[in-house]
Image (spheres, rainbow, N blue to C red):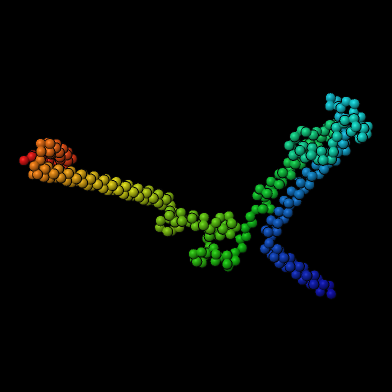
Length: 332
């Protein structure tokens, strides 16, 4: 019976160990999540405790000053003349310094937050003695509260750090192996983790890979400094060629515009020349008709003047275009 009991106990211990190992493995699946949750709870607890300490200090100061300095005649040079502080009513009637609960609360908050407007201050001897110690402890409590709030909301503490899980499922492996090469490299794993934890966008990784492809000329996924120098020189050469082509196009365009302007100017000169010839022929025709019809001396004079003007116009036209031969008409 003793052996049976011993065997039962051994089997029970083995079963308990196996169960504990299974629970550890099962708990290990969410261990990091549980640690993060516990860390956040601790951070929240510290914030709540520090804020509670601040509220407690305000409450202590409010209670003290609302009782001790509900009405006081002060002391020394600040004493109120003819003031009687035997009772509260007598102090009020004799013009003593009155401080309500709201006034005490307002003074404690401005004091602990180091605002210090100065419109309210301790008036009694015991109030100033208490305030000398109360202000130091209260300001330290306020600083601790602000520090915990800052750590909780803005700093990266242990409760809020990113927890990475190295377990890889078949779906995760397929997502990592984008090239279908059958294995995952360190860079594939790092890229998947960065995108999966929203630390980097996939578009940013694609842009980085495109920049690497520009340097990796031979496509070997390995880059030497010689490749970088070659890529840089190639880029500078492309820039130089592009700049030269652009400059050539601009020069060609300028020459085309210049030739078009010269052609337009020549056409205008030809039009002026034709117009001048037409006017001269008209004047000659009219003068000849006047002579044939028996012109008078006055008509002859007018004919000579017009002929002289026509000759002047024709001479100017000949100067502008050497191809025009100037002719001076003579009356017959």
